[in-house]
Image (cartoon, rainbow, N blue to C red; front, side, top):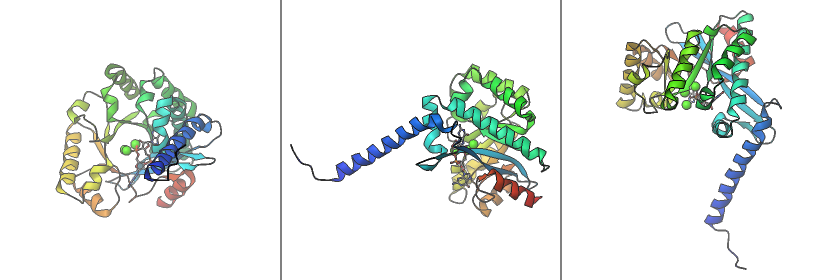
Length: 277
Ligand code: C2E
Ligand code: CA
Ligand code: CA
Ligand code: CA
């Protein structure tokens, strides 16, 4: 038998093996994550730029893996979408977020919306609208306090079914936002045929505000077009004062980002909100 020395190629393939086994572990263990109570929602406040008040909180899922530690949604949502696990996980997220918002309201702090990310696979599921309505009933959260965020890519598939579902959700007074806007291929005028209330400008454009003129131009163009179509605008990923100033000048309605607050566990957000009152 030939002996190979440990060269860069073997190291590279070991790294690939590690990545593959990480992904396999994620796939395998995700099935038990809900039962084992390993998922948690963090919440990030969304601020009304006119009043400086918290107008909503976005729910962002985290996974406490017993061996691998804290896993970011970027590392498991795609896997969950592939395996179909996104359906039970998505339902868990919705139910937990609605229940939490109802608890906040009952605790007497000024009410705000809870925003929940919905994956394309969920919205394509035949049962999605009924599931959402059922969860609102079960948790006794009024529909106007729930906002659903979907990404642009959703609009390229199953157009009729998706449109119908969005209309039904809109009819019961749930708010709808289009997430990560500007990263896909849709134009705002195409969006007009869908009942969205809000556009969330993708973080990459907000990052560019201080960097180059294009970041500024694209951001202002999205804001004015969205306003002309009667949609409000949220800027995500605001990290500093100068981005915020620019966005306020351009009459962006809402903002979210590390400059205001990172996503936090329930208790920390609650304390934060009590302090601000
Ligand atoms: P997203 O919906 O675009 O969420 C915003 C992401 O940007 C979050 O990452 C948030 O922590 C991060 N972020 C917020 N402000 C700032 C900032 O100022 N600077 C920077 N650099 N980042 C900021 P996170 O929590 O890791 O979530 C990543 C993505 O995973 C989300 O992107 C969303 O697409 C997906 N995701 C999270 N939770 C869920 C969920 O419950 N269901 C589904 N389907 N997807 C989810
Ligand atoms: Ca989002
Ligand atoms: Ca986003
Ligand atoms: Ca994003």
